[in-house]
Amino acid sequence: MSDFASNSFLKYNLLPDIIESCLKTPNFGFESESTLTFDEVEPEPEDIVYEDDYDDDLDKSGKRISLEDKMNAVKHWRNEGGKKRVLTSVQSRYRYVHNETQLYKWERQIESHGGRYDKLQEIWEHTLNEFKKAVDRLLPIHDHDIQRWARKKARELNFDFIASKKWIWKFKSANRICSRKITKFVTSRYKQESEQIAATAQLFVESALITFSDYSLNQILNTDQSGFNYEMYSGRTLAPKGQKEVLSTVKSLHATTHSFTIQPTISLDGQLLSPLFLCLQEVSGQFGVRTQVFRPENVAVYCSSSGKMSKELVKSWFLDSILPSMGNKALLLLDSWTGQSDRKIFEDLLTGDKQINILKIPPKTTSLIQPLDVYFFRQWKIMARKFFERVLLDDIDLDLKQRNNTIKLHSLIHNQLSSPRFQPMIRYAWFRSRYLTQDPGRFDNVNKVCFKFIDSVCFEDNSQCSEGVFIICSWCRRSFCFTHYFIEYHYCNLFLN
Image (tube, rainbow, N blue to C red; front, side, top):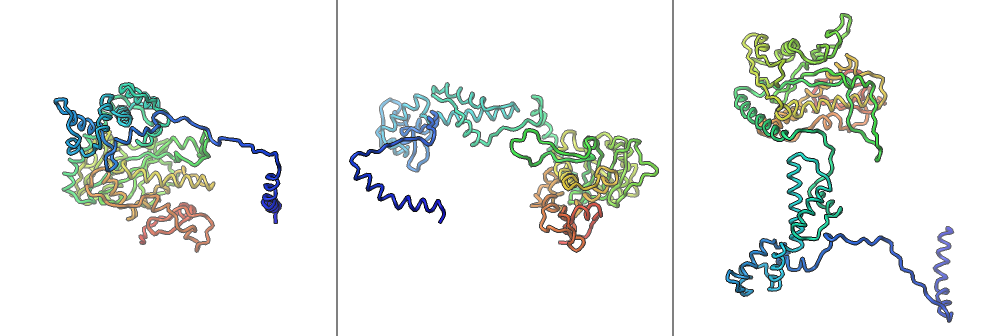
């Protein structure tokens, strides 16, 4: 038996003897001591519940009687001539009336603009309306503004109300209000301009849908350019709570600001066309004579001094990425970038009896009605960041910003997103842009298809690979480590269920 158990046993066995000894002693007394184990907090005025505020304010079903219902009942009771109606007459029309005492009380409440509950309700609704007005005007709002609106209304109602911190917390919680960082500053005309942009976008979509009827789903195409930094990084990370400064390592700060351009093309039936057009940044605007450029079958590789497209490169894109995959005719949705605004550029490059129609998406509306911008590019960038993060976390001796690694990276991403498993996701981008009226239904995005791991071992080398799983191929559904997927270049088109 432990010392603690032994001492407890002796203490409780000797207790009867101690009590008997005390009772036999002629002079003994008891000392009592009162203590508080918590701080007594005086309730705020608006948190006090008064019985008389509630007893007569509920109907038989327990539902609260509104001030308007009380006014109707009292008005009927008092009658127009001032002579009171009998209680039974009032109760026959207003079944929530119990007795005349209740009517007298309601009459006093009406004279003072309602009872306590009614005034609290009116203050709540007024404060919420003021908040919504400020939100609509895109104005900054703080806790003291909520308190000021509530107190102002309380003074109008001649009601003792301070809008305490607890009441403000309840108000914010009930209305799903929280403090948020301002991410963008705009002028007072922003809302009006936004409404005009939304109206323009809707008119374009309605017009485009009429044109769509002359084409099959695989003939309706959307293409757009997207800039990518040579080194991508995540904007969020896990960190200890309370840490004031959150830092993240990159291999090159220079690479996080210099970019290149990709230009994919998707069709309304959910296909990602091949090849992808890739424009790298080269100082001289062209690859050196001795430069060994990796040229995979699904990427058309070009370059410019800025890493951005030009009119000449638009011609190369059309010849390499559009003409080989289009049939006799196609409908292209393009943004209003001036480099591709000249329809004659495309018409001069057409061969045989091929026809192409161009629909230009109005300026400033691409975030609303361009499928690639609305959803697809986000998925591409999620996948690209996964590669950079794994290289940094596992300290892999590989420079992803090097020319051929950049080409290999986007070749593999294009290959993965070309899988039939991503067709519903691509169709969703069209649906969210309002070009499809029927929801394509549930779909799996990049994270669910490629980065939701079940197997913990790499498929290669008869499962003897010691590296952790990096990706699941969207085609063959096999798990691969970074080495066997990226370095060994797992380009796949074997579709397995």
